[in-house]
Length: 394
Ligand code: AMP
Image (cartoon, rainbow, N blue to C red; front, side, top):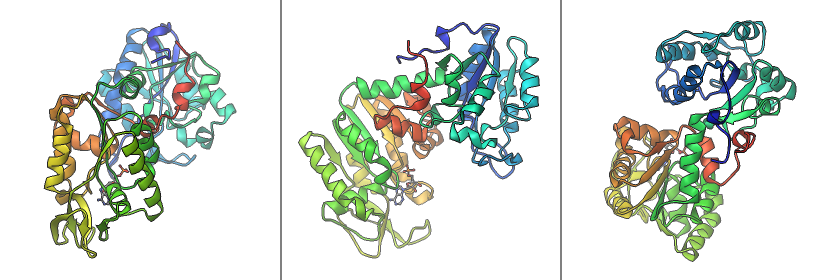
């Protein structure tokens, strides 16, 4: 990575504002159901504590839309962080108000304060310069470690960098190194696996990856737009009619670039979009009119497994079927196992694919599981992320 990190700057005794991505999922009792984002932020926080910095953390949580709403308080994150770090993490009652100012002014080296949800201010998402300056005035150095929001230019992800020396944290560095390394200098053969509901969400990613990969495996709902574009019968399966021409263009471009595109050959179908409807396995090119493809079938799983043999780099984003339904999570599960078994450099992004890996206990067999959904997609599209661009060059 060509950006400065916390290793390149003297933080001792300094107030350091760290933007983290603590946007963790909560259940109805406000219990954190997946703390991966908190755990991923610990190396940066621990390093800063060890160096004797005064660590001021900030993040958003959910969508409070510029209003103070108790249900979006970061209190649960402060508690979780306190127990991980083995020291009290004080929660300010506000972001740039009296509480934040008082607590941050009382800090000693090694102390940690968490500001309240930055999205309690509508100025945050507008990247308002006055709010950015107020936030920056709490600290002497800015660290961006929130890869998950690096594709947004908000006050806490970009705005503050105009007022403070800005560097990357370790999580940000790791994400950019893995994703960037795979795109710029991949060990070959390089295979991408894309799934998920829609082609339209991943057009940019497909176009950019076609320049780089040897094979592109397409599953999930988006495969049906490609199958229909080839003239096949897809029944009631999800399809973006307005993207058929685009799908044809992509298929043609792949042929020109000698990139092999693999589509499902059989599909696990049902009469309705439901886990309880009558199901069967049919040929993906001949899906009867009253049936809907909800997962890849067993022959497709074998085809995709075979295609992955010998791969040296694999990027995977998006489930291969409706993984929320137990009957239709099989394709995603088997592909997760196959990716883990290849021994290739493997990079998994997107909530559903990462969840499948975690659920199967395969996380330690994957080289890098990205914490950023939207951000990792934009990075794979080859776009510049404002939360990275704003950091000091090496
Ligand atoms: P994405 O956020 O684009 O990665 O899409 C994830 C969603 O794609 C999940 O909610 C899946 O249920 C959905 N999905 C995957 N395969 C299919 C399919 N065959 N039909 C409808 N939805 C699908």
